[in-house]
Image (cartoon, rainbow, N blue to C red; front, side):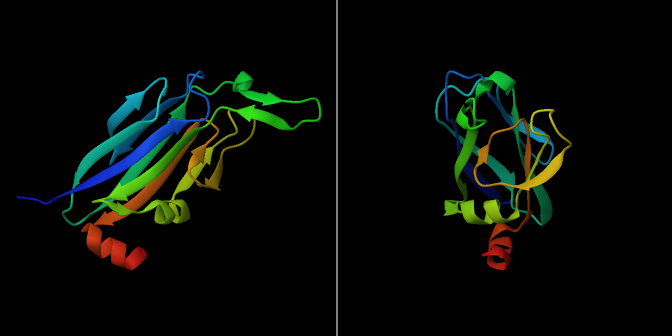
Length: 145
């Protein structure tokens, strides 16, 4: 019988009135999808801890140009964004590792070419944050802390 690891995190929004969506998958299988994140939402998912490579993908969708307010000087005065925080594996905080290793792929909501960006816990553009890790988890943690 294989061991399991538990991945936990919290999805939240800067403005719950804006219908921003979040889809989360592990190894290509969607385990969370919400077309309108309208409250702080704790998520939990289990994966096999057997030897292997894994990819956790957070996808934000639904962002529209009018969800970002810009003043006459070109300064952003408010912006609808989703945050992903409290990321844990088996109750071990891995937020810093995720922020160091994850890659945020987006195209500024179809206004520019697609880029690979750093991920600092917030998604302000439709796109994906991809985070790769391996199991057994404790061995991976030792190599990455």
